[in-house]
Image: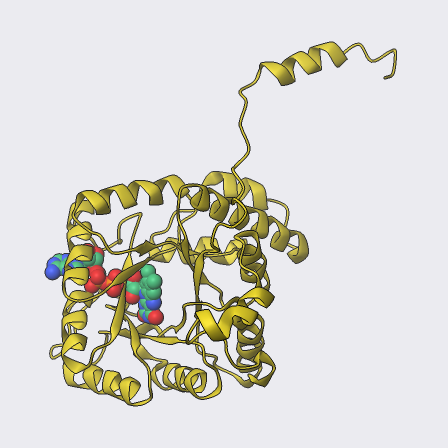
Length: 333
Ligand SMILES: Cc1cc2nc3c(=O)[nH]c(=O)nc-3n(C[C@H](O)[C@H](O)[C@H](O)COP(=O)(O)OP(=O)(O)OC[C@H]3O[C@@H](n4cnc5c(N)ncnc54)[C@H](O)[C@@H]3O)c2cc1C
């Protein structure tokens, strides 16, 4: 120690007088790895198609329970969603889930799309109301399903799909009240959905409180946390504003100064997401859904932190994870 450094005793005292935080617990050895699912969006160009399939090739060995493919706002990607899901069925043994919305179509048209999925071998639908184009208020199609709960009931009549629906820990922006939104979630599950996937959130305490509310409302189905690994903070801020997810001030402070430094930004994003999943895991959660944005790196690393190992999953795949990865990943894409 520098003899002239007379601030040392005061510094140490300051360090020792603050609050103490114990570390987050580590997953005990032998504890089963959590179940994962991944969301992709249908690519618009050849280059994005390559990016998507590189992402699928990287994530497939993690043996997700299912991988879902979004349906563009206003139903604009119907053909591309179908093509992506059909290719997943044809070329992989991953279990695909097709997103389907009520927007801009009659009930018969939506039912027809669902029948097409069933015929193509798709057994899982993520049933959603969908959003109108930015700046417009939602207007149901005169002959269409009005809300996601109506779509779930309609799908039940089409075929014996597994159905997932959306949940909103921070309350859906159009809901008349938090209670009404929770009643809506229950309605969707009562209509035949078996799981909800949440809008992404960054304040884990809000999600955990939401689980308490769900339980108190008589909901027993899993409310799987939807997680958004952040690699482009500015984009997430913009998107969150539209979909009603809040971005805490501490996140802005963490990402501050990384605007022109994508590598550091990605590393900060990994820390944020890794801390979040570890906190969720410490609170007993063992199912996670990732909004991958068709990029594998952060999701893969976070899965690793959660205890999911690609190689082990692949070795196990044939006997334990029916429908996940039993084909060589190298054959995909
Ligand atoms: C996991 C997930 C995946 C998504 N994937 C897509 C996608 O692929 N494509 C896409 O376009 N969008 C997608 N979205 C966004 C979603 O479409 C929007 O959030 C949409 O605004 C609401 O959809 P919902 O299915 O939750 O609607 P609903 O459950 O129908 O609820 C919509 C609103 O209406 C209210 N409401 C419901 N029923 C009633 C009633 N009877 N009376 C009054 N109010 C009622 C609800 O409280 C809520 O405010 C996704 C969202 C999530 C969380």
